[in-house]
Image (cartoon, rainbow, N blue to C red; front, side):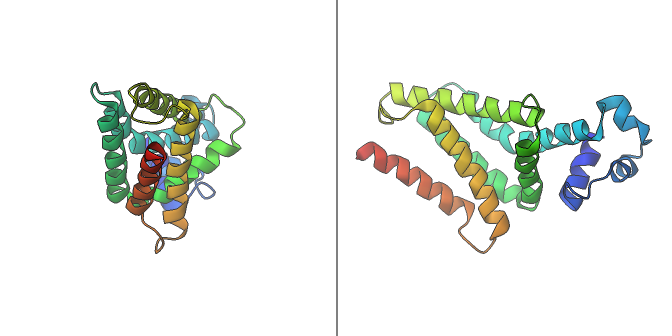
Amino acid sequence: MVEATRGCLRSRGLADTSSRAITDLAGAHLAAITYHFGSKERLVAVALAAELEAWTHPVLELLDQAGDPATRLLGAVSALNATFDEQRERLPALLEVFVHAARDPDRDNPVSAMWSALGDRLAAVIAELRAAGAVPAWVAPDAMAALILAVAAGTVVSVTVEPAGANHRDIASQFASLLLAARSG
């Protein structure tokens, strides 16, 4: 049912994803949503979290590896660029993730939990970079992690709303150059 919901979200968007459309695609009875998830809203939250997980899984794997934190962070950026290339047609569904999370009053929803975990992992890597002297001492790990997530989310918006504009690789390159300039400055 989660995969059917993800399919509906990708093809129809959040506003047009109905319980009937989900169950038709899943080949399930309408009552299955309430039985298994409690509500359509909870099913949608789980499906959106799965969509976000598909984007962030390669990044998290690289951030969690042992080794040089700078290499891990650059590898994570590279993995995110590759995911953008491979899943570009899914960008609107990723936008739906951000919109839904912003409107969901339940701060314990799966999307918020995943976003928080990603921020925590990024902050830990940035703290390692700061401790190793690879980034300046003034870089606050939590704030920089939030900034990186904001740039990533903004990139999704930018390339979705204006596909002919700056591409995600150029945006990532500019951001990395900014960080390097801050280090040398």
